[in-house]
Picture 1 (cartoon, rainbow, N blue to C red):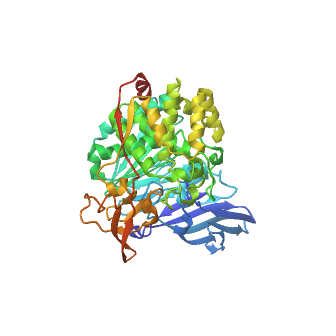
Picture 2: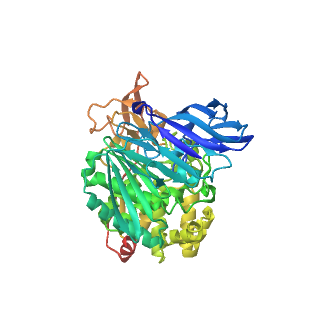
Picture 3: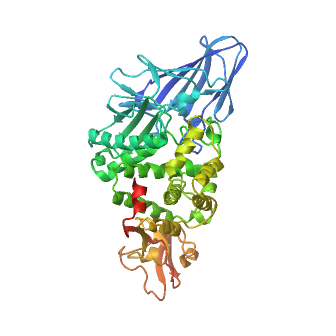
Length: 550
């Protein structure tokens, strides 16, 4: 089968797509569009961006119908070639979407090509019409000048494709593999310095896993003129959308680009090849429930950061600042009172990527990363390490494309350390506050975790969090304010940094705007201490710390 993609009007952001497919006489054809895409476990319903679906044979309208919200069907009454024509709206600039403008055509085929039911292993040719001045970045093999080949639907939908007249290309070699870097947009950093950093964390990862089964890997960067941050993993590539491009001249912002790049490269092994059995073959037509979100994203988040430390880009102080922010985020989120990380993994399809109702879930990325930290430190203390567990998972389930169960991972941990096995079972399956556990484990490695309750009395004394517009965004459920204020109330404050209550003994008297009603709310005397500020510091340099860093 073959796709032809063109643009009648660049500024409209619609692409015109024609699928040519050879059919047998009386063959029923089902054309399924993905409801979600790999790397983001929520329904995206890409069919909402499709219009004008028609089927022809020899320029005669055959007719088709929708059997569901994202599946079209038709009958090939005669043997021969049929054309399916439709349009797709390319107006989503992130690492998993599609975009069309005067400088580029950016396509994630997972968004709009059809899985032809029963024929998903059939070779797919993709021809794209674009200006001669454009360069193309994609992991797909090409037939010059403008045709690309995928072995089947699974490869096509997992291979991003970008053509642009504003693209910079470079590469580096590491341990016999070639890594290509493509930049769309303005570059405000040293590419040569960036490649040195990439080389070091790439080398460290490949060495720890023991193999990298690919000749080529592509980092594709969209350097945007506005604030943005997103990355998506693919089997032989990653797309990273990040901005503001001009701010990448500063190390603080460049750290974000390097951090997400390390994270996505780790996905080359973990997720793209080491997969839970539910994802061994992607079924993008419906939800696929997972209990292993901790492994998929938590471990990847932790390892993406720790490899920047172990490869020499981060100093230990750099890493502690990153860790401090992660623990702060965990401390501020009370979702652990209501869900374990396994619960939140299964519930990704509900609201895993949005804020949701108050205190409803844990963040599988952030909490998962901190669970991975605890597991790694416990394993190191026992003479092992999380990288050895992941290498074993790679050798048992990744290299041979076998899907693992969560219990398979736990059994590998158990074979390395009984103490680590007990710890990981507690952290995965119990609703508990992780911060005291983190404090104890970090202390064994010479790192002190302390709390501060200064300056913000509204937050720390009364458990009320407000944003920059003075809107109440969170209320601690154990505070007295929980019974007097509502999320969404606007607090009237004359000077933000002064004490926000008239008398410590009498409690707080707040003037608020509640959905255009002016109210005065009295909060009783409060003795609690809420939402502490997290601080990490060295107590001493220990041999254990050296084992962790190296």
